[in-house]
Every structure is written in structure tokens, then in C-alpha cells.
Amino acid sequence: MSVPLFNLAPNLTVSRLCLGTMTFGEQNSLPQSLRLLDQAFDAGINFFDSAEMYGVPHASSQTHSEFSAFFWLFMFIFYLVKYRYPVPQRAETQGKSEEYFGQWVRKRKISRDRVVIATKVAGPSGQMSWIRDGPKCLDAKNITEAVDGSLKRLQMDHIDLYQIHWPDRSRHFKVLHSCVSSYVPMFGETEYDPVRQFSSVPIEEQLDALGRAVDAGKIRYIGLSNETPYGVMKFLHFAENNVRYPKIISVQNSYSLLCRTFDSGMAECCHHERIYLLGYSPLAMGILSGKYFASDGAPSDARLNLFKGRYSEGESRYSLARNTLKLATMEYLGIAEKYGLHPVSLAIAFVLNHPLVASTVFGVTKSWQLEEVISACNVELTSEIIADINKVHAKFPNPCP
Image 1 (cartoon, rainbow, N blue to C red):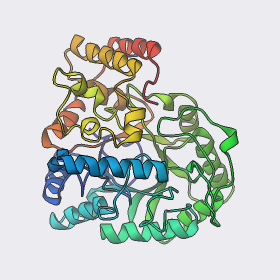
Image 2: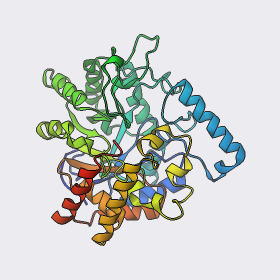
Image 3: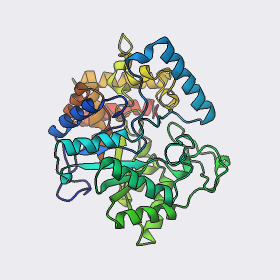
Image 4: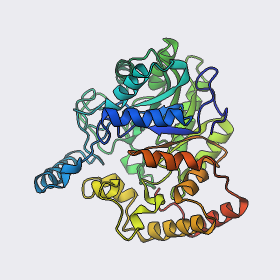
């Protein structure tokens, strides 16, 4: 389950499965998180993904009470109206994902050179005031403080891969501040609107701050996330023209049977510039497991059920009411059945079959879910299976962009 695609750590082959720890600290308690990390590590997974803004809000089993339902509906409306941001975050759980991973490494006495940790700096949002007052922009000061904050929570001396979580160009509104950001479509948006374009923090400033962190030994490599071909090429252009700037080595974008937008302009950029894809959401928020189309409508703790009515990104990008999404998914489930494969195996194997994918970043909350993903690494897709997949894609291209 490992291939030497890119050297994130000396003398270590990075696993092609990357366990995302987004739910640690909210959806998973510390003991649960440690057990999942143990299970993943014992199975050969040595690559782990986090972010300074994780863990994300999660409703416990008590959230289905009448009071909690009212409370979360109120919070959703409040954040949606005030900030127009997809998911309300919580100051109380911010950074827990990094903390839990760091605790696992120390408690299990795992040598630092046996694991690879990737984490991310939050882009501008204006919402998360507990993260450097917003953050309002992604300038050098914000990047420097974010790197130091992650190292402190991880209790490590370096980060293997440090990524910009989303572009500084991604703000959807202006603020009266010295740092303002421009616009780029993402998280389900597909069309660029030039009317919404305005100034942003220079990429040179971001690369300079990241380069200083590399020089100080705080991070080894840098990458981008939720980026566009334009953004990737601009970062590469500035790095090529200034030896002090580090070159990006990876892009963490969504990639699955239901989202193959990477294969357009982004794939060409990455192929020629030797940049690897870390494809996240390979199961399209669990949709490709088929659980939402079961007769019982999936378990109550499945994310799109648990967060129903208060997760605008999930319910727009992964809307179960979208007919093309359902039709495409049912055909992919049919392919899995036709060839005797588990739907999770088909979905994961498809992503890992891509020549530019270094690892696929997945999240689980339960041990049996992790077992299903690990089993997918043993699946080889034949040319006949790939042909059937491509026929469905031609009929229903990218229903979850």
C-alpha cells in the first residue's frame, strides 16, 4: 500500500492512504482517536492529515433532542447570514485534531521519522475570530503565527507538509481591513465571476513567509489545497524566479468518481510540473459507499443525516436531492456489484489508480470504516472496469464538483 511517489520524509515510503483527522476532538473523543490511529498505523498507514481549524463541529447522540435541534438551526442561520460560511466552527475544539495526533505520537513513543504529518493554515474567512481575528487574510504574519501554533499543538519540531487550506483569493466579501482578499470559485462553485475579483495578499509574500519557515527547519515541504490551475501556476512562477521561495510539491483537492474536475486543466499543470495530487473526499462524503440509498436511508449518525439543515457546503456540493448525483451513484454501485467489489473498494481503488495521485485523504469515525478503506488497497481495477466507469462519467460528469 506504499509507493515512492514523493519524498516527504527521509528513508520513509509514504503510504498511499492518508488518514484525515478532521473529526478528532469533536466527532471522535481522544480515546477513540488514539484507537483509530493505532489501527491505521498497524495496517501500514504512516501519512496523516490535519489542519489548524480542525476538529469540526459534530452533533453528539444528544443533538437530536428538541432543544439541540433548535440550537443548531439557530447557529446555522446565524453563521450563514452573518458570515456566509459553510460550517460554523467552534473555538472550543479548534486545534484538537493536531493536539490529539501529537498526543498519540508521544503516548505510543513513535519515532518521529516513522510518520508523516501534513497540516494546513486556514485561509481568510472573517468568521473564525478565535483564529487570528478571522483570519482576515493570509499574509506573512498570519502564516508565521499559524506555523508556530501548529508546532506547539503537535509538540513537534517540524511539519513534513504544510499547506494553504484554501486560497487567499477565496473571500466572497470585502472587509474594511488592511488585508483584503479576492475571489476564486471553490467548494462546489464551478464558474469564475470576474465582477467579484479584487485585491489579495501577494503570493510572493506568502512564499517568502513559507520559505523562512522552511529555512528555520519548521516545515519541510509546502503544498496548496482547494486550488485552481491559475493559483498553482502563479505559485510555481514566483518560485522559479526566486531561489528563496520553496516550490509546491502537492495539491490537495477533491477527487472521486463523482468529482473529476482535477483531470481538466489542473492535471496538465501538475503532470508537467511534477506536482502530486492528494485527493480528498474519495467517497464523496460517504455517498459512494451506497449507504444513503439503502432502504433505511443510512444511519442517523451518517454525516449528511447528522448535519442535515446546518451544513450548507455538504448539502449543496453533495446534495442527495440532485438527480444526476443519485443516478451516477447508482450506476457506480451497479459496477461494483457487477464485478463483485465492495462500493468502497471501487471508489478508493479508482482514486489510487490515477497516475498523479500520491495519496488519497480519507476520514473515518469508526473502526469498521477504516477496515473497509484499508481493504480497498488490495483491489486492482481492470481495463473493463475502468471502461465502465468512464461510460458513467461521460453520462454524468462531475455531479459533485
